[in-house]
Length: 91
Image (cartoon, rainbow, N blue to C red; front, side, top):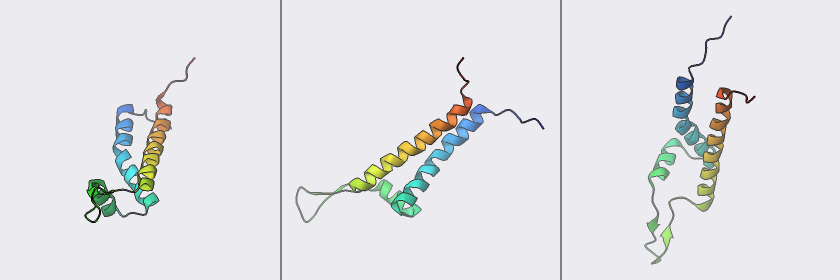
């Protein structure tokens, strides 16, 4: 049985299209958020604290920001690993 050749463009496009979903799922899992909470927090903005002048209420905690950045790096790294199968070995 011969294996059909991979359409590189289709394969890469499919993987790139799935990255936002993978990212969202990982963030929701790591931060213990539902999908609606993910989108609500994504739209959120820092707000002035009405009780303390000059203070800000952040939309995301520092820990959430840090973990989100780490997840982004993990998702991109996994995509980079997928590209290895397209690279020809150097001679």
